Image (cartoon, rainbow over all chains, first blue to last red; front, side):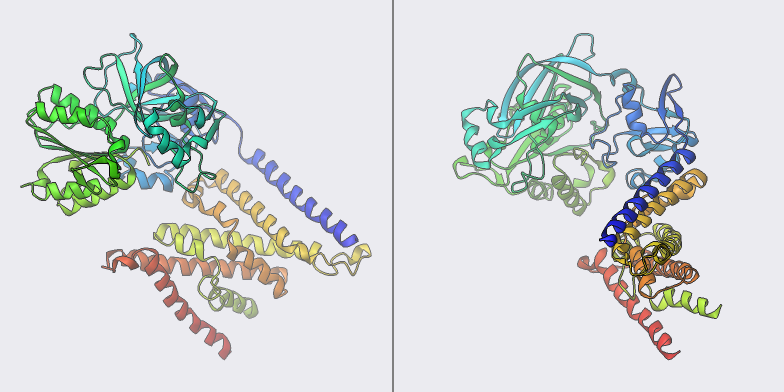
Length: 407
Length: 204
């Protein structure tokens, strides 16, 4: 009995003693002082030692984009940091930043923990357009079983200018949603019930922000168009992986609802050259490519444009009519969709297989695939498969521009 | 003095943690891709083993060993069943303290360590150092030497593996062997090499 009693006492005393020791030492060694961050030499933000630079800037309303929510993988939160307060780049940053960027004091704001005062340089458009604003949803419609189009009326005072390929950040408020209560068009109801999505629910207790590419065409004046894919967990892992917090919320909103946005931001743009352009998209990778293709064609470009788009079945192939019409109207534009898994009822006569296979088949007949520019957007698997295919076709990486959803 | 030197060599080479005892292989393989990372890990191992083994020796001798409470009139009391949990606690706390000290006084080394220090909290080679200390009933001085020796052995092994792996970066390996595959093969070959140290110990 003494053994158990004394044993418990000893171990509890030991653990508590050590924890106290560590805490006291921490208080002694690491002073809890306020720091000053100078942003673009004009704005001053205060932070505490040990804070992440990204959260300090977000707290001050400077909405640096961060698609991966601070895990150091998307590389969108690049900022230039000078001063001792930022320390050396972490190993996570070395994977994302090039040696040239590191020499230029570029850091990932989400991986920089502050140790002292420092000066931060962010792009000017983040300071001006980075502020959040509230807008009204103009219309929504389902494009595919898991893809929804959301059109937002931008406020008059908010400049609706953007470059094709830009994205905006959408902030979802805390909410609770049962997927069973979503209004779905009858043709998608079966797919939802079979996959078990209708039975899922999602709860979010804090504001969450994610980035979505703009699919806006030039004729959508004063509006922002988004293609939202509902991020459902992989089949069989429904209990471990929750559905996407922002995409689920965007599936529940109706026209007339308020929506909080910031942006536009982006670095994925049409290059000002005269080279032939090849667009490769999959899933909601449609969005920025749609904006780019429409913009290029409406400006009367003479550059040859090819668009390869991969979907699973005909139900997932959205905006197809729109691109077929574009191809009829413009001699320099061609549209090649491919289905990886056509349903028996699709009566599909086009290409089948993954989109990189279609791309390889088409481009190996091209006289000089290495002289084209490639714009990719889609799920990370698609992007890596297409990069490998283009590598085999002899295309230099500097001619490939892509947006892999920050994954 | 020679006895202590022998103990150091034994801990570093004959009973090398990753290559002879196969302990701490996860960090050994994961952090041997680049020599700089391996060097950081090696230094961290020497520091942590060198601190935790003697510290755990004090705690074991003073509180947990059979007969440690005889001064209080409890000569039969044996709290050694608590060693595992106590050792892990001590390791976690000393890693934290080490991290704080580095953060405060040597921030550049702290950044160089990066994630390695917290990682070592749950590393089996670190815990094994303390458990061997109990099993072989080392004194305080012996356990300090043993801890430093084991850490040194780990550092040498991981630095060697990293050197070979970075050298192999230019080799044209079969696709299936690239990365972790060849690292396992290398570790196996190095382990065979280290087995010869056991012969030296046996010859003594």
